[in-house]
Length: 225
Image 1 (tube, rainbow, N blue to C red):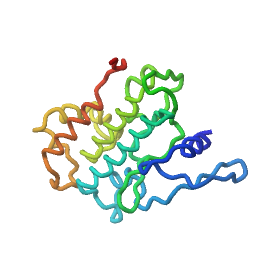
Image 2: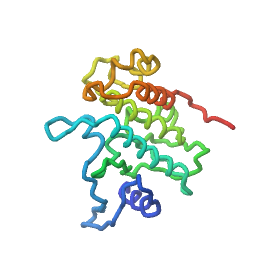
Image 3: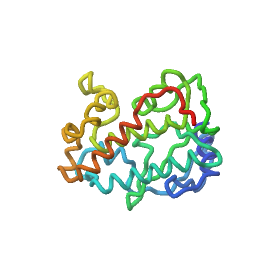
Image 4: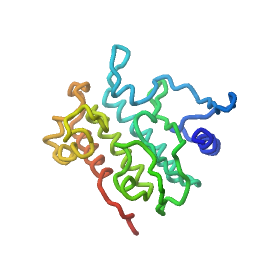
């Protein structure tokens, strides 16, 4: 069912920042999908992978990836189908040989008017990236994707996973723990990804932190014009 939904979405949507679906076939009862080859794999591997084959992402590459992912998300929200992605996270952001970001995995995406709420009886997505108002009420909005984007921005800044039960209890949920650091630019440097080795413009990092904080604001009710 999920794979069939991907075929339906990617069969009618095309954008430089969405992964291309070349075809599909059935192997017995299993539906197999054929995507374009993404040489650099997922953003998740680059941020959190370990070993000599994993190279730390430079600051300008991180910005390039975020901008590409944002363009893909904007296209989905503004498309005629008005798609809510519903599973924006680092493992679903794939990278080609030039680190161009492309969104993948549309099995949880939902079509419908972006200005309206979708009430779901079963909350879908990934804990840690899913917007808290969606998790608590089942009301789904375009801004639910914006929250996920904010989490990915914070992961890019810090190199810390959205959710990690191996961390101290107060730090397990990245969103809850990191907000005071995002709000205070003097504290921000204390949580920046050490693999950047300080090679980033402080002003840009501060601007990204402020944008991420805006994306993570808790506002259960939709904004009205």
